[in-house]
Image (spheres, rainbow over the protein chains, first blue to last red):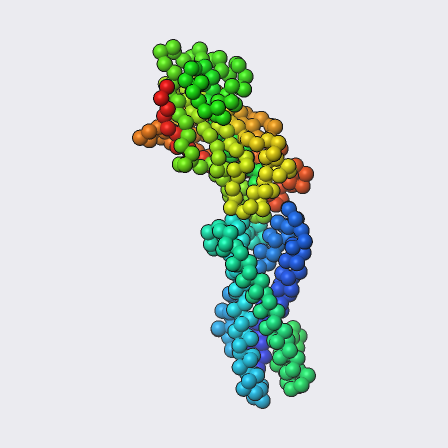
Length: 183
Length: 221
């Protein structure tokens, strides 16, 4: 499997970005729901992990976007209809926007509470906003709202991929699978 | 975690000054710790001061004073401050031994800009503000440091634990008095700020940095 993308398939680096971010997002959801049930130090620790993974997603998002810009993007098949192309385009743009917006709103939540964030206790990141209770609530609500949007768009994305695979019987899904083969 | 805060507050020192009449006019809160100091601390200061006049006395201008603490929390430096504290300095440039510093920090005034964390700080495992409402620093003399600066030689009490502390400080003249500033660091666990699970230092570090800038107004004596 080539490292770079071709117009027909995704390269190994693009696949790695895609699946790593998928796993990290699921992990983020799991940690966040655990943290809601915890108190005191345990909650602090759980949220510290959540923030470290969130910053990881943000850094991967930056690299992923750069990589996409300097690489060919595999085309959709010729038989893909216009409405499908438009819907795919919108959901891809949204998904990219969300992998930036989720970590950024979370980071702002933390700054607003005067909890500077660190990346796995190795580096401290700067504060994005000045501490204020109101900012925290706005960012908290936004972070949760965006998560809802993320779940919705991700489900649409999965549905689209499955349609390509099982109904249209093309290789749009297979070409993003870690060891998928494209004829 | 936030325990460090307490430490910081304590670093400010109180003045011994126990000796002079001017002291009677001092604010009750500030005077109390000095009065409680061992008699031995007060006596030398009294003897050293000539009868011709007590050294000038300075009290804190609360609006222009800050007592900030910084500690490590989950790998990042978090900070807060104590909004209420009182400082009394008796300072004679030519007689540092007769100078004194007296600081009292109201634990309940802790502010980290996050109400949940403030509540944790005031809780029994950290400062236990209900049982130990104030931290104090009582220094019955000042001394020159090797680097030429000053330090207050005293005792810091947080919760029910007291340790010797040499508090570095710089005094700068202002139109109506002095500006006292400096910074130091203490270990929160030395003072019992961290009981139960809060004894662990992997999430909340042991060291607390304290930074103070206190505006002092010369009072009539």
